[in-house]
Length: 161
Image (cartoon, rainbow, N blue to C red; front, side):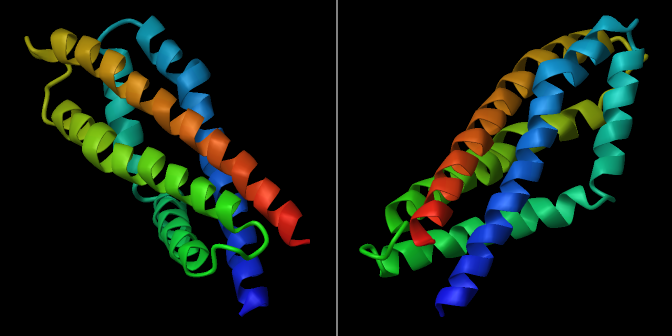
């Protein structure tokens, strides 16, 4: 079982790193760039991003990394004294809560509301302003959770070697 756990840990760490890069990009410059262009262009661009991203490799990696982190947390709870177990548990739990739960409870509902709003309509500017503030705040949480999780999972790999 150890090689399978090691493989799952490596997969999770790599996929968490990929997700961290995506969220970091949005937090650092994508959302600021969309806000800087003339309305409603930023809102229309984000609506397009939201439609396209779910048809890319992003979604399978999002779900696979979430499932893998949940599995690792369960495995760590089953063998709490195994090398790297506590780091694996914390890294996986932080990732699952900070990525999966935040996305499902925070970002996706905002994406759905944005999609339902006509960017060129009377409610467009207010929705875009609210969306930028709330979605970006939640994305900062995801970025931080990914980064912390990545560090902990890499440390867990180190303890297992």
